Length: 318
Image (cartoon, rainbow, N blue to C red; front, side):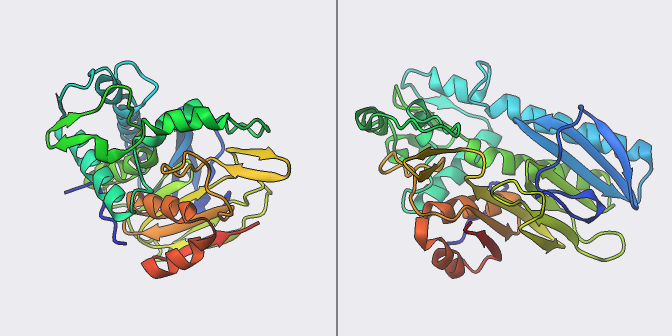
């Protein structure tokens, strides 16, 4: 499956990490050959690495990255009453004209739904009303899951750009592509400001502008699913994006069975026997994120499915 982007752990050298520690907004510190800036957005620790520029330039790039990340969060968050998503939810089943950026994301969501045979469905977020992936042991009542599942299904949404008609009671959740889209957008904006080597990392989903100043690839660690200090592996990334999907932090454990947070929109229940984590490299972070998520949704067939896609990938089973 070819996924086109919506545009028309812990350790790595030079400080690139797939799970950067949470620091105060706009923290900027020197690294070997450059700077690392950190801030919080989209409920994630975010970082920007840049080499070969002055502190003043690095600070400007960090401010631009933070501004853009927060703009995207404000616009597409399902938790904000003033977001585009909230506006669509309040439309009462009436058609709404959306702006070009929102239309790009909806086009991408529609493409992913079709290419995945319905596994990738941005209307499935309503199922969160039944599930609490907080590490506890409480499973929802099957009847509740089934009632919510009746409100899931991208084909029920009428999308004829720029008009979207969302049936009353249904919801959109762009969280499955929003953070990765933000990484790609921020990298594009920063590259327009500087030719210096860049790495943009939002909560472990990242993209780079190219090799580092000395021609080497960036080294990025894959986090252990159990949170151990040692990385599960180290990836050399010289171009493109990287994204990871897994159940390290969001899961239920009932009678010895682990239920990860990725739900099959066709059943409303977690996918069983999936890997603990899947990391994928692709030309953009958005593409990598969708491929990683879809691989997890294949359950025990994740490895076979990824091999068929031809994308570089790393799987952690335990």
